[in-house]
Amino acid sequence: MDHSPQAWGRPRDDIYGSYNPSYLPHNKGGYQAHANGQPNTHTQSPIVTGTSVIAIKFKSGVVIAADNLASYGSLARFTDVKRLKPFNKKAVVGFGGDVSDMQYLDRLLSSLDVQENYSNGSSGDLDDKTENRAMMSAKNLHTYLSKVMYKRRTDFNPLWNALLVAGLDEESTPFLAFADLLGTTYSSPTLATGFGAHLAQPIMRRAVPDEEASQKLEREKAVELVKQCMKVLFYRDARSMNVYSMAVIDENGVDLKQDIKLEAESWAFAEGIKGYGTQTV
Image 1 (spheres, rainbow, N blue to C red):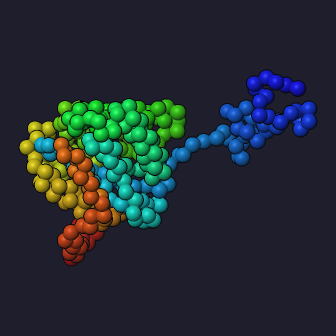
Image 2: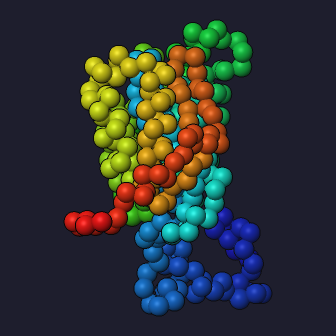
Image 3: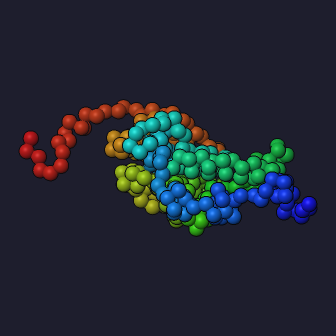
């Protein structure tokens, strides 16, 4: 009888016959090819997707928003998908792109949050100032997520998402940055994913062209700009809807509001749209 550790837990070959690995893929020791003779492949394009996420800095924090729609191709399939995920009192992640990959990242962040709470001893024995200093900042979270995205890209199995990380850094100053499925990262006082990069960014940049302007922007004005952008996206983006979530992150923590309905909707402007080219009527 074979008592080697490699044989532990396996049926005895002399009684049951040798193990047949033919159904296993190549990377598991088998020789089963794909049904059409090709190697196993990963996701080549997202299936159920969320559209734009937009965010803007103001003098003491960041406002971020995303609608609640997840589209199955061009079908508005799921209307209650919350794409803003608070991480702690300092950070919120906004997800665009594939919803299943968003759910994977959400579970990953939940596990990371538990580890952070244990390692920092967040059990009530620390004062607020010490706990805030020990808490993972939005900047650290963005670095972590960018490494996750880049690692999956190098495995040729990318997470099909565009992420916005909004919140406060170690010095409690506003932080806003982007990461995508290739691990590409950049930061700006205004950011948007999807169609928002074409439709919402011009509106936000008109009010906040640079970092200096963001340091003068009041919270109320930033919220109004985001609401205006969400209305424009609903009018112009066929993959959006009129119910959205919005979060404000500042020194007081995360103020997340969900299922916000667009106000004062009006399609009166559509009467003047006749089509493309020169109009004679």
